[in-house]
Image (cartoon, rainbow, N blue to C red):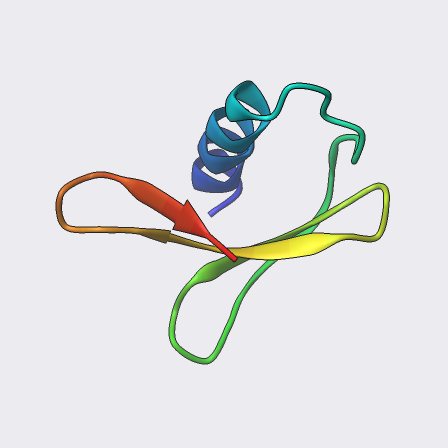
Length: 58
């Protein structure tokens, strides 16, 4: 799971002009199986990879 979280982190960070949330602090799965990543800033997102391969987060 950590390796996938690092992949999602890199994709997310690459599309944000000024990433200010730091590195990964914690990783877990929510009740629906989505990967959740908390960053050093304390902010966290759910990540889901669509069947098309596109990554979405909220």
